[in-house]
Length: 142
Image 1 (cartoon, rainbow, N blue to C red):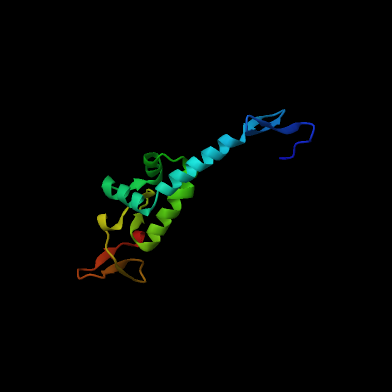
Image 2: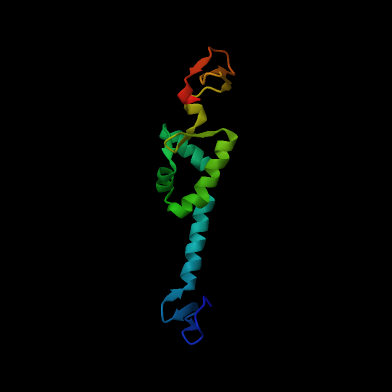
């Protein structure tokens, strides 16, 4: 029992609710279970479509903190629910994370998909997959 000696703690039943009592604290275990159940029900309501809809409706890239506040999650909830979904969407190419750690839909951002051709002097070019002119990349952007 959490490292407490038998004389310092006792376990007893009170009105059908299990209580753990020690000289340091008393914790109602039934309240913990209902909070866990409530948290799990919120987690089930948040899915890929929910996050994609929020990103689509915002019209601009938004941070994970803003997503968490909109969905009513704390930092731990964000790590547990939103982060894995965002990483999956990034891997699929549906969502892009910018330098300011904001997420947006790839189709709404002004991005060019293509191949990079590097030069020995440090600069390079993006050769677009779609027809179009090559884009120059200075050494700092390589």
